[in-house]
Image (cartoon, rainbow, N blue to C red; front, side, top):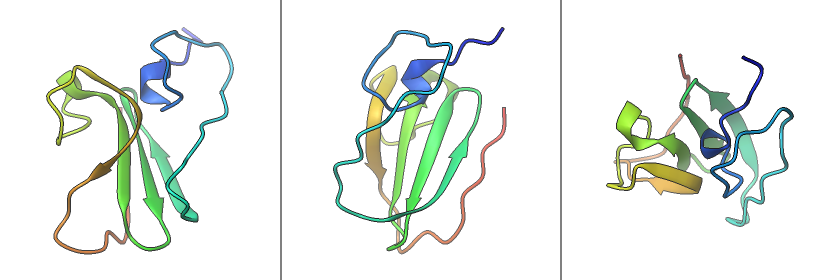
Length: 88
């Protein structure tokens, strides 16, 4: 299966895609790292803020009750995040 699950990409769509799509990141911060898993994407900024998008039912995005988070959403943390990783 070569389809990308768009709800995991943060492009605001629930449609699957065969190629990556540009994501508008309107939080006016420099991106340090991006990590992707089967059901989610994590975005770490240079200031240590963590944003996530993906399928909440896979426990990919912990701060929402919505089944799909289609745009990067700030994840609450007790301080700056220093590193991110994802798995399938």
